[in-house]
Structures are given as structure tokens and as C-alpha cells.
Length: 142
Image (cartoon, rainbow, N blue to C red):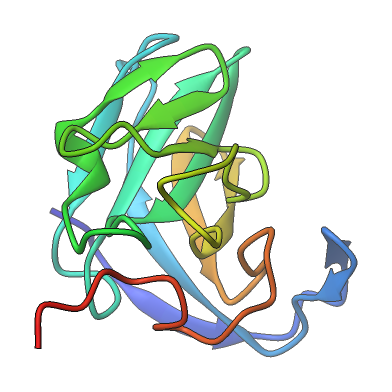
């Protein structure tokens, strides 16, 4: 569903972190993605990413709830909040932060740029709103 991947030095800062030397992946034309809609890109990252449009802007999060290992792309987007379909954990699409239990940490968040009608995700351009380790808040069954 996406066309290409490149690593470039774009030298800007988003969310307090530099995106220099970050991997930029072309997502294609997302002009058809209306406010309140989301789209999953399963091939990007270890869990895929979910891209959504909120407030007229595109945002990208890791497509995996930090609480219960469930795809967020199956959840509901209301305003800037993306709610997990399993237990209702909610994440802010602008920075990946969680709004409270049952999640104990946020999810990875990535910058999305639109250039000449083509959307690009900058992997590693932001991190989740909470700085715990990658599995710190995930529900364990074993």
C-alpha cells in the first residue's frame, strides 16, 4: 500500500526530538482520508501504524495498544482521541500519550508530512507521550 522508503536528514524537530536521519516512508495520496477517519498500514513497523486525520491534520501511531496488544486501527477516533476496541484505553493521536487506565503508558507516535499531495511518515520522528519501556504497560498473560 506504500510506495517507498528512504532515509534522509531533514533536520527539523517535532515533539522535542530531532528527526534528522529518520526513515521516511511514502504512504501515497491520503487526501481521501476525511476528518475522523483512519487507515492501517500493516507493513510499516513491527506492529503496523494507524494513520488518522483529526482537526484537518494527519497523525500516525503504532497500531498496537500498550495495554492489551490489540490493533488500535480497530478502535474509534473521536476528536484527537483514539480508543482501543478491547478495554477502552484512549490515546491522543497528537503525541501518543494515554488518558489513563487501563493503559499505563502511551504508544509510539510518528510525524506525517504531506508533500505535493503525497503523505510521508517519518518513523522515529516522535516517541510516545510516556517514556516507559516498550513493554512496560502491556498486559501479560504468562
